Length: 372
Image 1 (cartoon, helix red, strand yellow):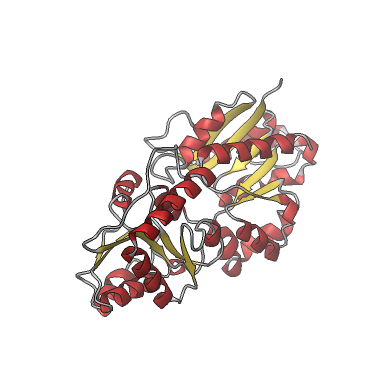
Image 2 (tube, helix red, strand yellow):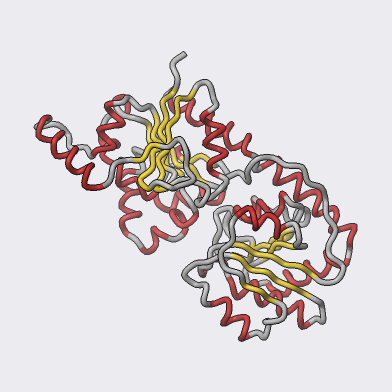
């Protein structure tokens, strides 16, 4: 049986970028029916077995030489020519903004070019098209020719209709938390409520909402400690709001943290908190649940698909800080109820968001595209 030749196209690749991706790629490589290669524009020291695409100027020289030898042919860039020449079956863009690098392939009849698959992150769906006309133009001009879009959640899939993408082109394949591991249900700390969050510091994450929940708990006379991890353009909000709400004794902001260290911190916490205004899925929330942490999150976008309300955690409106605080207090004070939430969180995340599930769904998508 002929193997399906697949290119996974990244801007950069390695442990420093989304550590849950390499295990998925390694699992796909082991599939007997795939001949898979990882192409990157930027090399990373920790990345092995990847092909580094030549730099900009080297590509331009090769493109110029090719155009002179193929006058009158459709002008393709270096990687477009390379994928056609090598008879690649599928090009999967793991960084969606790389669509500019392969969009000329979409003008070629489908039977004569690789299938194009694009994974969309939350910002590609909920944010960028509202402020960047280039994204709207891409969806309007090329969306019908892209063979498959991948979203993280059903909500994200349905939202893509706003930009004119047909539902039958969109496939929901949630990200996975990593390799399976053994863990058990938890009980809350008895001395104080231990809260944790880890996300990119930007307005969508509702930094103030999270901190106001902590203030409410503190004002109730409860002992609370909140650890925040992450960096980003709005990181300045954190120390300002800690000072504004007089939370210096209850809140510690640590900035960026490696995933391995974060997992250790999750083991020490009682609850994961994230009242985001927008979230396609939420990798840190999935990870927290795999360690048995009940999650208190907003009901925005895809989050209700990660946290099962009243079973693995609670989903509230982004501004419903009183309700969020009450849920935390209730669970912390009821060890039996907390234990049941913890057990359900482990089972839900470990089963629903496993590498095996993601690889199976990706494999099915690739094979179905080649049968069309």
